[in-house]
Length: 396
Image 1 (cartoon, rainbow, N blue to C red):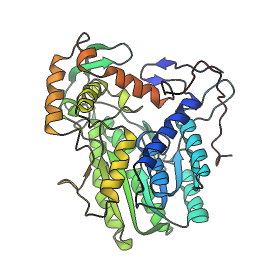
Image 2 (cartoon, rainbow, N blue to C red; image 1 turned 60 degrees about the horizontal axis):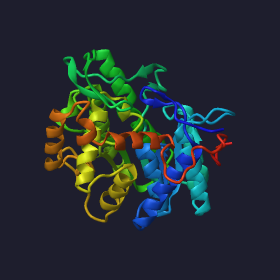
Image 3 (cartoon, rainbow, N blue to C red; image 1 turned 180 degrees about the vertical axis):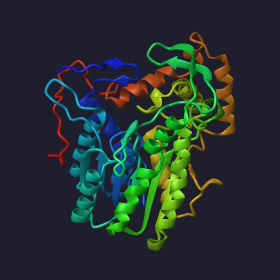
């Protein structure tokens, strides 16, 4: 079938298998070009199919020759209907890993569930024995707590008062004002249940209980802080409360891993175009301005560049881990540079529908968004027939 992007708001309803494959290959080539990383050799990535999770799996495999198990929740293809991009990404990753002689298997299902945890534990036990790195990179709007059976839904809301600021429709380029009503206590609690550290802790407890964590094992989860411009709707909003909980959980996990010499960290990463971030009002406009400034300064990074730098320069540098005063790894350091943020804040005041094409990089934002779904990749003939029926090799 000929596959074209079909949009509904901030979601693309189609994805291109060849484009997704090319996107994965591009990331693999980047990692190979940067040289080897003396990193972990047996890696579990929870949330492995897109964004930072996919980049972590690629970096582990092609930077450190690691065996990887990826857990994700993606929709396979059917005749006449494309899969979700994470499915095609994972199919491409496994294919390339196997060609390189690397172990790679995947589990498709709800990572919050006891059943998927059990499947992952059994696979590690059977094939790897133990893992020495666990990446936690889930981004889901809904979670059913496996203990209580209650389903929780997260919300993107400020806390305390209505938030009003500029935003942009990144499809049309129209800049408007958006107002978001404040969250109530139930909204906050639900968001923490979905996006906080509870499930991360459950994974580590389950692995440790069955002796599946190697001595000195490390686990890392990803977070974001961002600038004053977005803090009302992000870091000081419901998501921020969830991130506070996630970051506090790192200390609890670190304490539980002391007996095996293990470590737990949260890495604060840069603002990037992801399926999750595109849904947050204000953020696409901020990112388009940020991209403009960081590209002009020669310090722009995508997911794969961020994770390669995290692994090479922080996690496995051989030096003492540098963290901030709250124990977090700050790989958002270039984004949060004073000169960068001053320029972004200045441009924000100048931004209108008319000025944005000149002072921002909305085209870069759009391109990155379409890349997530396998579109607008160089070297792909999008007018040609594509086979939508693609399998992930290890998933039967």
